[in-house]
Length: 253
Length: 243
Ligand SMILES: Nc1ncnc2c1ncn2[C@@H]1O[C@H](COP(=O)(O)OP(=O)(O)OP(=O)(O)O)[C@@H](O)[C@H]1O
Ligand SMILES: [Mg+2]
Image 1 (cartoon, helix red, strand yellow):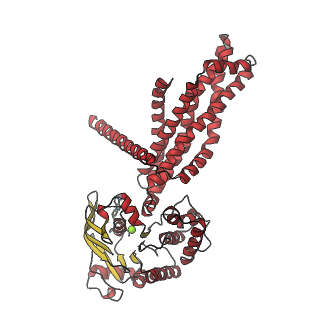
Image 2 (cartoon, helix red, strand yellow; image 1 turned 135 degrees about the horizontal axis):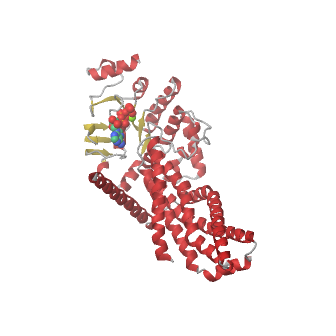
Image 3 (tube, helix red, strand yellow; image 1 turned 60 degrees about the horizontal axis):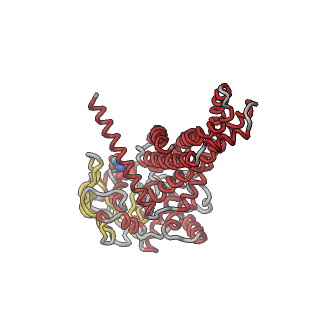
């Protein structure tokens, strides 16, 4: 029993070490300027199109659901005029970065690990190598850069959509003045609330792409291996994001 | 010139290559035969540095690939064309981008030059006009020929063929065999052909090596192979004919 736990623990640290090594290798290459710009741009467009609809829908509905609660409770307290500020704070600091990362991991992270995993088991990674292309340079770095740059854009969009869908709910209650909704946000919010959320987004994008790429590259042979790698990539991305989010909230705000 | 000196390769505890040596001269065409799982594809991977031997040396034009940095290996690989057994086409790219891959990424050809070269190579493998097809639209035999077109796109000096004719009908198979011979003659290309197909062995190879227990047996020629002194080779060839 303890022995099993020990083995699990060792393999956990092995994996962590390997992921860190991959991250360092990627940093080094990026600093050296080994960036395949065409692939990076293509990935950004492709992943952007993939994730835009679900990110928007998620932001709208989460924004509305959250506002329903806030509007109801705050009106009871007679604090209707600060609803806008509360919604903005919650959306910009926590809800938009976190939930965008969740859907991004499910949509894009899964797609990355499945793509790289199936390239691995069908020898396409070796084909790249045989034609003098380093898979890290050609495949992985473009995906990582694309995700890291794309996430802040998506979260920015989710910020706006979430905040405005809160306004809709507030207006729907018939007892909140839209001017107060905007003004309260203006007085309660600092720039760091928005920038903090975007920093989270940047890191989440990087983590999702890194973990998904790592899982893809380490896919065991066969279609079953690809499925397992994909599931694992999503699960491990989500857990990492939730943990990281807590610590980031602690230091950022 | 390729010189393989006493290489050994294990996967886990399983020994796949056992103290194997081989030398292939510039412009020579050799075939490697042997039962499934005996290590033929592994041997090709070792030659192009996709895997490394546990011990021994592999010299390509006097440069030892086992001692090189990744950068040096990548440079050396530009001389090679490798046709994968599974074709290994890039799923995300159409035929034109697959075949033109190395021209675009390594040789920085212009789009026009790439299109022209791709058209030529597709014609050579009887796949004219398939530029815009995706690999998922192609049959196994078609993929194989696109893989071949990709391998020869940049006119490599050395071509490694992993079962170039498996899964092709007899006419296509003959065309590909002719192509292998033609490329070799015209451009003095060194060819290593891994195959199970008797017609390919007989029609393309100057020398035929059989892989047995991780080593290569004494080579035969298309003329001598039917009367080989070695019982493994005789059995293999006879088995192949009665199949
Ligand atoms: N990456 C690997 N990890 C572990 N074992 C491997 C690996 N690659 C090959 N093998 C094993 O090495 C042996 C030789 O494999 P290889 O693919 O070279 O055979 P082959 O001669 O090409 O067979 P076939 O004619 O079926 O293509 C097989 O037993 C295979 O299971
Ligand atoms: Mg093989």
